Amino acid sequence: MSATLRQPAPDEHKPGEDQLGEHKPDEHQPGEDRPDEHKEALARLFDRSAPTYERTGVSHFADLGRRLVEHAGLREGERVLDVGCGTGAVLVPAARAVGPRGSVTGVDLSPGMVERARAAIAEEGLDNARALVADAETAHWQPGGPADGSLDAVLAGISMFFFPHPRAAAARYRRLLVDDGRLALSWWGEQDARWAPVFAASAPYGGASSHRLPADSPFRSVEDLHTMLSEEGFGSVETVEQPCVTRFRGVRQWWQWVWSTAGRQFWESVPQERMHEAIAAVEAELSRLRAPDGSLTSRNIVRFTVARAVR
Image 1: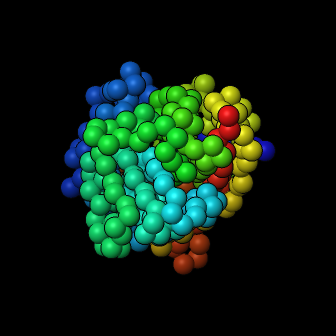
Image 2: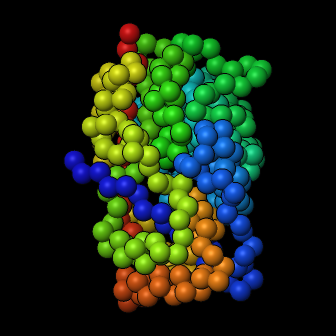
């Protein structure tokens, strides 16, 4: 299997004259600092994305969340932890799957994302779900944090590769799970090669990217992830690759989507005096991808990994 690192996609709405300089990069960029600083920077990044995350008219993370819940094979009455819950893309379908006799707790370091998740829970009328501001990597919170052996499943939707210590997180989740409990996570596989020139065009202008993987990241390949999970007490580790097709009405909607995701971090790192030049370079490449109706389509690979806790 091939494994390609996810490129730092530009985010949010296209920066216009009224937006340039509005968002400043964090003084400390994720991946370049101590773990606590890394996490604090990520929380601020997702706080900035929260108002427009999954609100640009593009179906993306909600679909991936539903698919992860299906791969996890949740059953009625199960107790579930959703780590890095974001706006509830995994949490909401998980709560539906376990039913009123089950329970789902979502945790995220971003207060803005947790606020969105709580709103989604309320809108769906789910009494068996909650969202907390807490560290998804350590899964500790007070009062009432989970006890060892108290969970049937831990879910991580497009989140675990952000963690500074994914191995420690996996070990923690193993302790929380009952025997034969499942850890189910989604993460990015091979990217649409047609989009490589777009990311190459932007690369000279910025530097920060929350998607840049450390050299020792287990998310550099399927084999590395399987090895890490096996070493941390999981068995029957399986990964399935599926297409993730994302469609945009046009260039404007693509910019809006990029700025609504973690990809915005790259564009926040572009110096204001070079922003227009960077936008022009990217749009020159986007023009080559446009269909006759002006739309854009990205076809990437998403990986779903399910591992079972063993003694």
